[in-house]
Image (cartoon, rainbow, N blue to C red):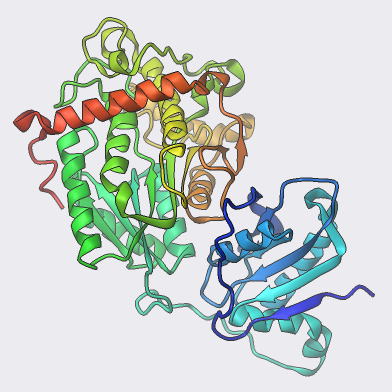
Length: 489
């Protein structure tokens, strides 16, 4: 009979410190892998491992404490993978005897998938923090527990009104009010009790806070007023957040999730700053937000910007639904009147795919400029019917995208549901390190972005132009302020 070696941690975390040994070795990760289809929904593991080689590695199965999510052990998983172990972070249910059944299933799943992840099946151990440590210990005596203990199963609801963990980090998010952004916000609030989510909200911010609180059961959420269509409002929002961070109202900033974006049928009406709106919102506004707050990011920190596989521009990635991007220069793309610029010649869908190519290029540019310990990624949720992305695409098109296409996703393998896409975005933002900074995350895995997106000259031109346009708009006086957008909470 095979045995599971146990390393049990029952009390408070102690003695596990990160050493500064220079650049950390690269690791690979795969998130939201189903290990059990339990009643009430699938159970997931996240796998973090050394880069694939012919060598087999020992595996450590990590069980979080009661009330934590599997993401709570992400730092340990990263350290273990860098030290040559395969770390597997586990979700489990909270009822007896389900939690111990889930633990055993997770270990069996690891052994069954040893070849897939380069694991030595004879060297698998279980490790846990707090209640997770007790769960690891219980694996060794599981049969005795079932035979001799007669426990009444009770489902314990963990109260979010009195959270077990006070927030120790802030993540700022744009585009959290609807669609995949709202789903991602809910997943983050449910899965990370140590996180405070600050959402950039246009209009009634309290309504957004109330909605996310009710949906997640977590009160650690606040709103910052702002409209990405106005660079003045972006600066005002950044200033508000800076004030809250510096006076201790919010815990340290550990992440920025730039999910907001627009897609329009036509792209003619300029923003209040005189810019083409698709490029201004999808690229320039997030550039400005990051530039205003980058010095406040405390390592380890992560920036994730939502892009789209439409930036590839081929039938494989778009099914012919969106035209290929047409890049000229950042200057012309940002112009609402320049011939060849989006507003001067590109239709709305082409402006959208081109702006998403700009997001990937911006991420590449950021990766070489951010300080050590602050990583940046572009994230592709895939096509997600059922959102309001096509709200400016005409009444019929918006209806089909929001109400009809979600019923046909089984015919379209390149699509994702709103909840799955949101969960994947949450994992990209707060889960295990996805890969090397600057990488493109396709749903749950890092992949190579389009060949066109790897262009250092273009990245440098985009960076310089974005700096100049956003800085110039801030100095332009009243023209850079959209009436009403900054003062609403």
